[in-house]
Amino acid sequence: QVQLVESGGGLVQAGGSLRLSCAASGSIFSISAMGWYRQAPGKQRELVATITAGRATNYEDSVKGRFTISRDNAKNTVYLQMNSLKPEDTAVYYCNVRITTAFGQYDYWGQGTQVTVSS
Image (spheres, one colour):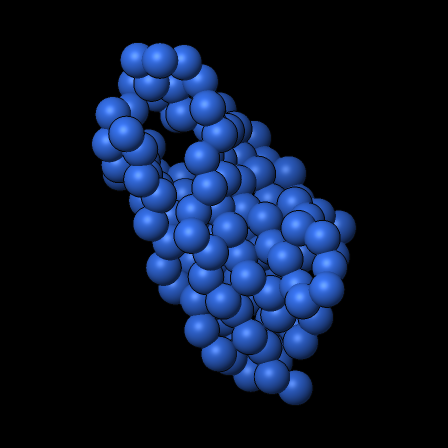
């Protein structure tokens, strides 16, 4: 069994910063891709950023230059540093982790953490 625990969301003024964390635990053989998605009210969930096992990164255009994704393999944790936040960044943020267990490779989702940016 695998668990993902997210933390770090909250309320911040426009121009501020937040750092999200997502820690995986349980019966993990290895972790490949890790990523962050977000879902605003009335909108579909969208990709924010991903990072591969080799630390190659990919960002959604609107967050390039403002957000940074990173990972700590020793802690099975992925981070999202969010700077220069804008009201349009307001959403529930979900981590997604591709994990290999004894039974195969699966995608796991965190519980979601609310990020609210006030203008």
